[in-house]
Length: 294
Image (tube, rainbow, N blue to C red; front, side):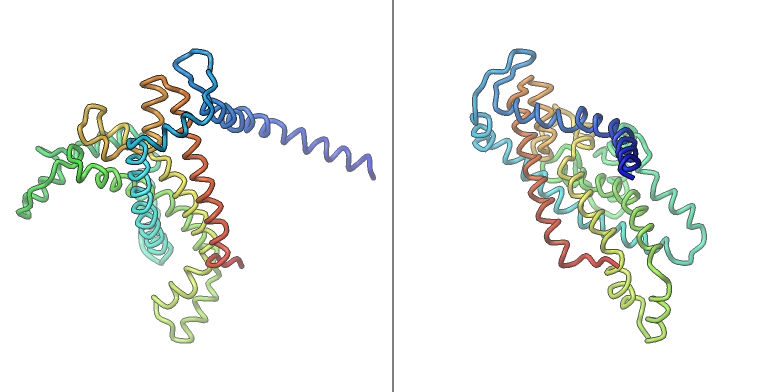
């Protein structure tokens, strides 16, 4: 019996070993190296020079980091709730008895499979202040459209709209899977008791889909805090409004890959990692009060 169990453990470790090795190489080791670099001054390919917590002091004394953190938090606070609400409404809509559900699912999921560079190019054309479709439509209503990407007051909003548009399809698919796991008998019993559609949504749908909803909230929040690609491809480095849209990850990219200050860039990444971990722990504790597992 013991020999049989030993063979099972050997096979288990054999199959787990490749995944564990890849995780250590691609995830654990880069995190350790980043933390080490954050405690050193690393210019280009020079040998790291120990500076202790000087990089962290520099980060929190730098107004540029504070502005980037504020932009990132505002982006997250807006895109996460708005995107998840739209995703849930879309999932409920596609879970009902309507025609051409497959067609609508494909349409909503298209932003997920589209190339980011192509998406950025299309949205830059839509946002163009002179011949963009959005400003053209506003002019027909008698409204003068702003310079969406070139103005400090609208550049972050423009990036938020693209972020929400891009996340709805992916979150919709996950929530739709959660909705389809809810037994129909609950809705039938509620209809017998005279419950309205709104009553069924808030008293049956939301509580029973809350585990899936929590997963979507958690992953979407982490993804929003790491926003980079839309900013990088939509807002040029020479754009005077860049500071109003600059995120933490963009700041990390600028110092690490443009200014070759790996030590300071690693400090920014480490601070973001700690911030994300703290928010994740808080959410894991809070979810016990609103997530209902069947």
